Length: 93
Image 1: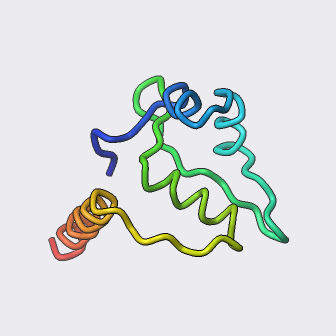
Image 2 (image 1 turned 180 degrees about the vertical axis):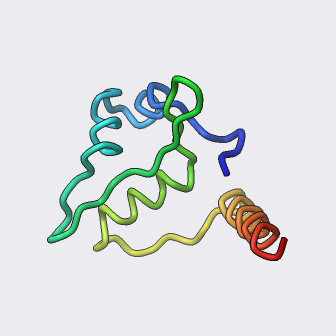
């Protein structure tokens, strides 16, 4: 499920200082890290592709496995907990 914090490709590209096509290539083709392919998760909403903040954070972590894990920010923790609760509700019924 996508929430209101999701960014469109042009918005994300501008925020991180990359071109829209670079972000699109990360979604479509991914990048090779070591011997595996890492892709940026995204969903299509209408005519636009959207990426949630935690999906981009996970993409960066997966692309840089040598970096030490940073503590989760309070807002990221709340988003993660909310998403886990939503998944649990769906599973429980």
